[in-house]
Length: 488
View (cartoon, rainbow, N blue to C red):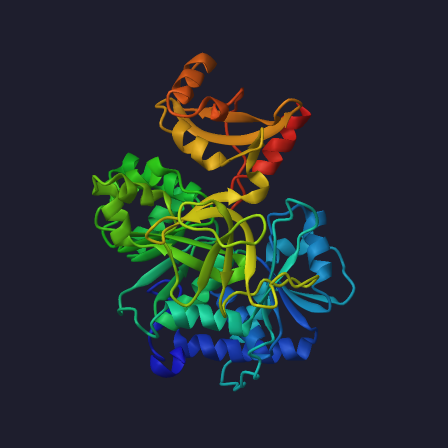
């Protein structure tokens, strides 16, 4: 559709040497012909961001072959286990990563340069998309923090529903360019390709994120739109502050993938008043975003004197109009405003399906395993994974609520709160602190917390570290931290 509507508009890469929509489609056709000759039921991808990624996604789609981008940051043994699970498959692999892969039965490894050469053959090669609405489009492996990674299934119908309901076809202005720095194996990396092409916005991929490289690319390519995870945004702001830069071409930044500390987004709004910020909450199993806190909500929350409105800066906004969302209690009952429970969602973009099992209900409702609540105006507040909720003496406590309070202390740079086993109360509250400069005393922190929290929510265990563990999409590895502390 994009190639028919605007064949000469730049779709991928830098302005000076980017690919047009016509050329992107041509390469995808050649890529599909190459993959068909290679055989295999699936197409795996092991590599960095770049124009080859969208070409490979659409080449696989033309053949109705599931596209499975793998986490190249995994240890070699784990990466090879995932690759073996894609068999029978063709694996498109960055040239320098090929030596990391062990021979796997029914997996044909093709270097990225070989695939690119096959896609760049002169002349046209027409291929029609198969009628594959309900076939699998993408397989995304979960992080595997609670066992072997699960392969989440996203069908063409799921992704199509998400794209069409959230993006205006060719709605981007001619000068718009999106900087994509999230990895290919994350749902945001996939949705960025699909929404960017459908909307007509040029996509510039950053191979690997560093804040310096991000800022340099944003300036060099006059980037107007970007999506980041919370840990990225904080580091980007540090670089901008050090250089005295303000990203004049930037119009909109969306963020998601993990909990955004309030001080970070408040600082971003203050430093970049010309930028529209949006908080997007979603899951792999929901084909990306299910609720958004938009730019107007950000500004209202920042400047309002109404405490209820100010509080919404910590929310993820309102559900998309094409979705239904409910908060349910322990017995499946639907809860009212300001009552915490599990977030359930239903809609055409929701998959709720893995290769091993289907976890979506017969009625279409998907249990997210995220806790949260809706306020009186329908704004969604996510309290974290239900597995992470601290249960102390029968009282459920949100780690995020306690973390937000502790972050207000001027000496705290980062903090993680979690529950540790306790013989008397079931669990006790523990806080892991990353200090800015001078390390505050435990007595000082306890007094600070007690003045703002109930005594039961004040951490009993305090530990200081140089850094907290995050994955590359900005999620705090709370269970890893909990296991380390429990051993100690």
